[in-house]
Each structure stands twice: as structure tokens, then as C-alpha cells.
Length: 432
Image 1 (cartoon, helix red, strand yellow):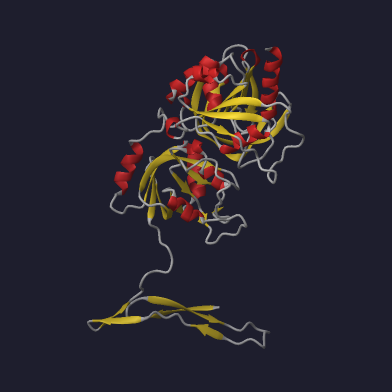
Image 2: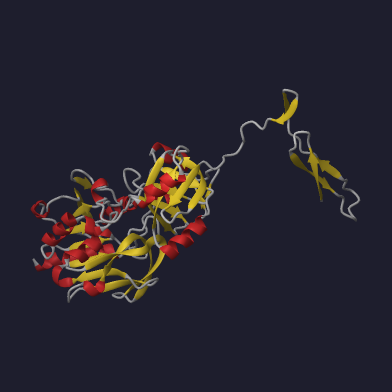
């Protein structure tokens, strides 16, 4: 193949390609493809009228607090948004990630490069709306192919006023986050804002110490009854013959936590994050769940106080944020991790069952086990970094996990922990 450059009157060079017949191929012929551009004349001079480009060009910027600027193409909503950038290593389940309230205040960068190919449907949502600040991906699928698809990812984000960008080097950004830790960033499609203005915005905003729970929690109590549907049920064996009343504190609870509890035979009352402990005790629950949620546990002392008032009075189970609040309520300390755990492939060692579970995780804070009082047992550790992934304190009827046993998305290795909670409530009933 030979390449020839043609010089036009306008001064623009275009490539032409000449394909040569390979030796020995007698039946094929030489042929040429000539590239041409329509010319228009203006005041006697030849100019090229390219018109509107048939492809999308970079129209968005992600400016990080370290001064780096990443050009990208936008989809979803337009405007300017600030948030903490974290990366998620899940290969599937982007819709469940989008609707996980624990991502409030954060830009989620997907390390899986191809996103949007299955579209979205309305059965996989984990909350009533999207709470994350934005979505960062490498490649946006130009088409959808799934029998459950109801809408494209771009249209879904536009309707929910969530910004997204693509055609950006997500691998390079991920390496930067791993080396430097989570960074504050500003995502903008507004040409009127300079790079310096966006950089100043990123450096003047902080997620630490901000109460994000109050913005994602329900406003009034409600009953939850839906179980995991039969077509998606994976638990072997029958449900408990007993029914247990569980009060679930909504710090940003995912729907699948409630579905799994209901599938194990629980009657569930969901209450707001500010619900008083005295009101919970009036309901005479068999157990209390402290749910997952976004942000810094130290920013919600009211929630820690509620947990303290319920310890020892009823069996409790904490998940993610609930685990961290239990750690603080017991007198322990929590700390912000370098870049957190976000993904559906984290190995965890379960000391009680002496096995390794692959888990779904989403948190930027962890409990310092060395700060916990005597009697508190570390039941699980994350095998990637050795951080505390589970606690138990039988004396006060406490159990907790730092990760998501309900997955969605993710593996089901840890689903049996809901059965452990049932057993703890059974034991309490027998002893009372």
C-alpha cells in the first residue's frame, strides 16, 4: 500500500491511498481511493467548508486538586460539579453502583473500560435516586444489548441530572489515585470557567467532616416487605419458620439489604438516621440493623449516640457505615483510608468459619482494631491490606461487617451472615 499526499489550493493536505496488487494474485486489480473535500469560494480565494463534525469532540474537563487537567467528552447532565474521585473495580453492575447512596459526594471512576452496553432497567436500582456526583468511564457503548434494557445510560443520567464523562484515560487516573490517594476534583462542561477557577474549586472543597447521611436517609419510617424474587433467589434451604421484627436505620440503605433480610424471614421497619433510640425500643424489635451510608462516621455524632443507647438492649448488626458507627460507639477510632475499597472482588478472611470470601466493598473509612476495648473480636480482615472487615462482641449482642454481604453487584459468598443475624435474634428470644 502506498500513501500519497495531495496539496490543494487551500493549503490543506489530504491523504490518498493506492492499493497495489500483491505478486502472485492474478485475479485482483490495483485500485486507488481519492479523498476529496468540497470547496467553497469566498472573495475569490478557495476555502474548505468542513461543516459540523459528525463525531463528538472533547467538551468537558476533570480538574483534580493536584493540578492535573483531563479533557473528555460529556454525557448525561451538563454544568459544573465538585466531588471526591474514587475508582471502582467491578466488572458489572454499574446501575447498582450509580444508585448506591454510599457514593454521595463522589465521582465514581470505573476501571472496567466498556460501560453502558447493557443499558439500564428499573428493577436493579438500589435507591430511589442517584446520589453520586458523577461517573467517569473510558468507553461509552454506542448501543445497548440486553433483554431487560429500558433506557440508555446517557438518557438515564440526563433525567437524573448526573454528569458523566468518557474518552478519558481512566487507567492513568486510577494509578494516580492509588499512588496519591483519593483526590477532590471538579467536573465541568462550562467553557466560561477557566482551568484556574476549577482548580481553586477543587482545592477549596473537602468531603471530610461533612454529614452526608442526612441527605440520603428517608424522612419518615416505612415498612419493607419485598423479598428477593424467585428468579433471582440463590439461597439454598428454606427460610426461617419464625418471623423477626428488625428496625433498620437508613443511613443510605441499599434495597438489596432489605430484600435479603426479608428473604430470611424478617419483618422490617425502616427508620430515618435521626430516629431516637427510645422510639426504636418502643417498637420492641427483635433486632436492629445499622445500614451502609456515605462519608465520614465522625461527622455524624448523633448517629454514634443512637448506637450507644441501643448497645446491649437488643441484638444489632452493622454493615459498612453501621460497622464504623459501632466501632466508635464501643470507644474505638475510625480513620480515612488512602483510596478506600470500591469493587466486587475483594478477598476477605472469615476467622469464624476459617474460609476466604470474595466480597463487594464500598467505603473510604475503616475501624482501627487496636483502639477497641477488650472483648471485641475481629472476625474478618481484608486480605488486600489487612484492614478490619468485621467485628463481634457477644456480651453486647453485636456483629458487624465493613463490606456488603448483600452484594448487588458482587458475589454472594457472604450472604450467610444474614443467617447469623437470625441465629443471634433466636438466641436472644430463647434467653429472654
